[in-house]
Image 1 (cartoon, rainbow, N blue to C red):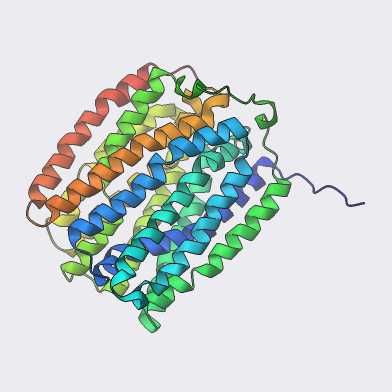
Image 2 (cartoon, rainbow, N blue to C red):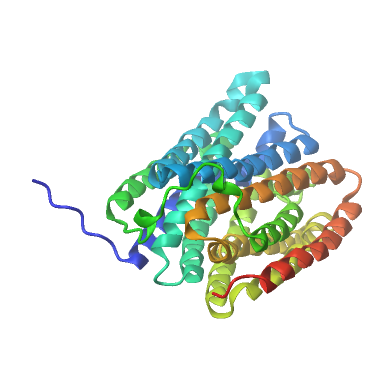
Amino acid sequence: MSTPARTWSPWRGVFAFGLVSLFADMVYEGMRSIAGPYLGELGASAATVGLITGAGEAAALVLRLVAGRVADRTQRHWLLTGIGYGLTAVCVPLLAVAPELGSAGLAVATLLILAERTGKALRSPSKSVLLASAAQSVGRGKGFGVHKALDQVGAFAGPLVVAGVAAVWSVQAGLAVLAIPGVIALLILAVLRRRLATPGLEEVPVPALGDGERLPARFHAFALAIAITTAGLLTFGLFGYHLAEQDLVRTAAVPVVYAGAMAASALAALVAGVAFDRWGGGTLMVLPLVVAPVPALVFLDGLGLALLGIVLWGAATGLQDSAVKALVADLVPRERLATAYGVFAAYQGVAALAGGAIAGLLYADHRVLLSAGTAVVMLLAYVPLRWALRHRAPR
C-alpha cells in the first residue's frame, strides 16, 4: 500500500508553480522573442506581423472567457492547466519545420502560434485560481509577484537560449531546442499536482449555468481600464520587426533585447506585488504612465531610446501580471474567480487585437500618430481605473 505524498507548504507550492512557469516561459517567450523577424523571413509584412501577433495575444486572452467558465463549472483546474501547458510544449518546437514547407510555411507558422496561444488561454484562468488559493495565507500580492518573477526568469532565459543557438546554428534550431524546457515544465507540474494543497477550492460550489455574468461593476470598470493599457502596450513582435527592419540590431540579437525586457518585468512584478500587499490597488495608478511613452521611445529615434522604451514595456507587463491579477482576486467572490479571470482576459484580448492591428497599419507611415495616440489613450484609462478603486470592497 503506497503512502500519500506529503503536502507542500504554501510558499513551496508558490515556488513550484513559479518553476513550472519558468520552464514554460522559456518555451513560449523564446518563440515570441523571435516571432516578428521569423515571420518576416517567411514572407510576412509589418501589417501581417502586427495582425498575427495581435491575433495571437487576442486568442490567449479572449478564449480565457470560455476557459474560465469551463473551469468554474467543472472544477477541473489541474486538467485544464496540464492541457494548456502541453500545447505550448508541442507547438513551439514544431515552428522549426515552417521554413521547410515552402509557400505554406507562413500559414503553418501562423496556425502553430495561434494554437500555442490557445493553450495559454486554456490554462491561465485555472492556474491563476490554483495560485490564488495556494498564496492566500502568505499574501496574494507577494505570491503573484514571486510567481511572476520566476516566470520572468524563464522569459529572460528562453530568448537567450534561442539567440545563442541561432548564432551558432540557426533560428530553426533555436526553436527546436525549446522542446527540452517544455518537457521539464510538464514533469514539475505532474509532481506539483500531487503535493500542492489548494485551501478552500474543495468547498467552492459548482456554479449554475448562466451565473457567469454576475460579476460586480467595479470588476468590469477595472477590466476596461487594464484593457486600455493593454491596447497601448502593443506586442513585442512589432518591436522586434522594427529593430530588425531598421537594422538597429541583427535578427539573431533581437531575443537578447527581449530578454532584457523580461528582466525588467521580473523586477517590476516583485516590487508591484510587495507594494500591492502594503498599499492596495492604488499601486496600479502608475501603470498608464509607464505605458504612455513606449511607442514614441521605440519607434521615433535610434537604438538607445528604443531599448529604453522596451524596458518600460517589460516593466508594464510585470505590473499587469502581478498586482493586476492579485486585485482581480479581491474584486470578485471566490466561486466566480476563474470566470472573472476569463472575462478579464477577454477584455484584454479584444484590446490586444485592436492595438496590434492598428499599430501594424500605422507603423509604416504614421508612427508619430501612433505614438501620440497611445499617450492620449492612456489618459483615458484613468477614468475607469479610479472609479473601480473607489468602489472596491474593503480588503
